Length: 135
Image (cartoon, rainbow, N blue to C red; front, side, top):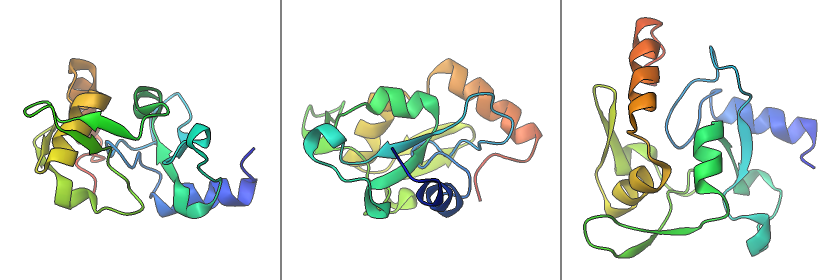
């Protein structure tokens, strides 16, 4: 159970956006998840430095994974950690597509399927409402 005050802190710190794909909670039907970056199953704690706001899609695709394969090399890398890494060092935008700048970025894009057709369509709609790209 995540205390309400901690939940509010995570949401506010994230600017009400998924910390993996940048999707705004505004306009979304499903409530975003509070994600344990290091999963509880791996002894991750329910503390502010181990929590991130994640859209339902990113949360479910990440699951309890901490490591993933970089698609080009097959190298095992840690999934992007929004508490320890800067999003813009690992990712960039090419219109509505997320571009991986590092092996962590490319692996995270692949594992979370950040550029699947439905996400591209959602981001295109978000552009119309001035919610994409995230500022």
